[in-house]
Length: 129
Image (cartoon, rainbow, N blue to C red):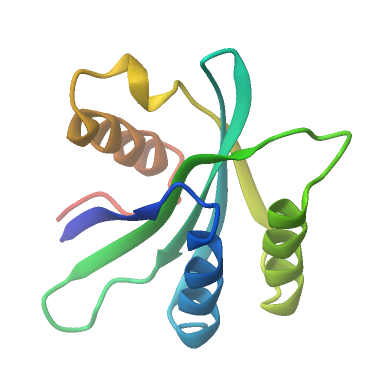
């Protein structure tokens, strides 16, 4: 199985595409994930839409808006509210995880490999067979 992050952008306007991807693929929707981090002394969140693997090709996409959404639990912003509304509409719970920022890694691909390891370890995505 191939599991790959597909980055849409940092979330300012890309969040709308992420929401549409989840809605139009609700039959394949596995999880909605919020990755919380601190990047450059600012609390930030990444939103992830995880789809079930394709029937042919065994490919599992993880669509992400990476670290562009300001995260303030006591004062939710419009993008957070939209993601929460999506979860309610699609009858999913948002899985929240605290992770290191992508800037800690020399390459973005290493960051995504680390995240895939975390998601596998927590059994949110299957181990490759």
